[in-house]
Image 1 (cartoon, one colour):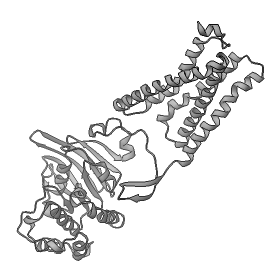
Image 2 (image 1 turned 180 degrees about the vertical axis):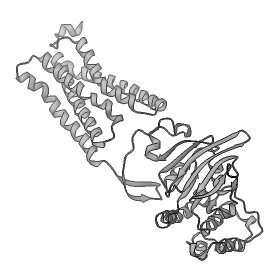
Image 3 (image 1 turned 90 degrees about the vertical axis):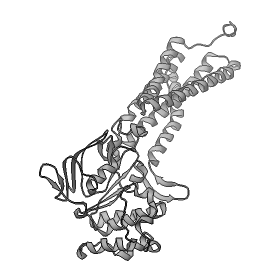
Length: 418
């Protein structure tokens, strides 16, 4: 394990008790403002001293309260770009970077000084004094100085936001190359998940100085309630996709995902309208009564929607597509059967009016259902209740239909008028 950290720190009303480990891959510290992200980075970098615990980096003890060890910041093999890391010296940028470059052993140097100066566009400010720099310029200088140190781990505290999108696009490939070729991981702290995901999908979620969860985005997202305090709803559906291209001007990406499973659902619904509609006709040809044929066909369709209830618990996209495809086919078959029932009961001149009234009622019920879906998702953040309603609704409707119309038979004109 590259970094092992288990420390306690109390500052005023803030109580930090943090324990986590980092291997040789980049990790994002994810939490809202005040969660303790910057404090954790400061403890590793050496700008803040914990009260108890230990911090071990690549087998070297940076801090151990029991053994009385506290390695000075300058000696730690850590490159850090911190928000509150203010360079108060009167050095110029050139002097600051040159001293950092020559303090690193020649055989350990990963970058040439001129390369970083050109990459981060520091040439025009090389003769400027450090205190005169803007926030963004200081961050770029600090990043160059951290990389010149050739550290074992690189700490970045919302650096992408400070240096701007232009430099971020240039820096990201370099950071990923450092990890792949030189084994230099990045510990990136941010309250914006998108910034972290640009670099890694490995997360450590912090809240009030404590680690809630750690692991990949897929693992963390499955834990109910972990992300809710950040204003992010629980993620029920995580879809693996293949990124084809990025459109930076439009701010979107083109990705390929479940083309075949989605097409299967649509095709199943189309076939259901044919198969479901002919099901009752098949029963009639076998000599069944209209009442038995229609109700049996509609009951079969109602039962075929039940597997939808299981879709929130399925991990296979094809199994989910099969459930939705079966339900789509059943819905179409149900609709075809119900339209036929209208013509079985009512005379031809009344069929259009009855169907129109039913369509209007369905539209109002749909609006109410959409409101219910929004209310449930906002409160629960999951589709489990929604799928339970959708899967059982047809069986409930069939029961009401069976009790309301015990026997399907044509109505006479006078019965309609009455």
